[in-house]
Length: 198
Image (cartoon, rainbow, N blue to C red; front, side, top):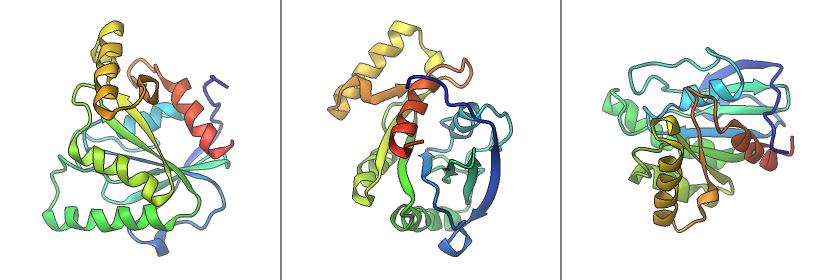
């Protein structure tokens, strides 16, 4: 495969906080989860070749609902609320856990979750919980580390090896990405297409 998937159409579908809000669909879904300031929205936008499909904000915690996007009428990208640094009321934060867990457990069309992390910060406790919970819901975690452009090429690879050692997995399981430079998209799309069959 190893090619950027050509996105002809990418459109917002709906937002929701509970199953009755979510779109009925037979299309495979890919969820994106991560801390509030790791560049999740920028990752999705750059993967689909759009600048404003997913709203980005300098204020952590901007995404407070589960947002669905139709990609080429072939799959659905699902943007989950960020965790960790969100400057939102505690009552809202408290509702996110059950909301996200309910979504992960209740969507038979969900194929994988892209766990988005900052290469500089590595894997934090909340990230680890997300990674370890994925198989419990029968979905595959895809580990993507953003902001790889903050390192030189060799330093980025060394950082990847360090993190992989901590996770006890091959370095190749960790995907490096830079939305600024547009690097790493082919590898991410390869994983997405493998699990969706698109």
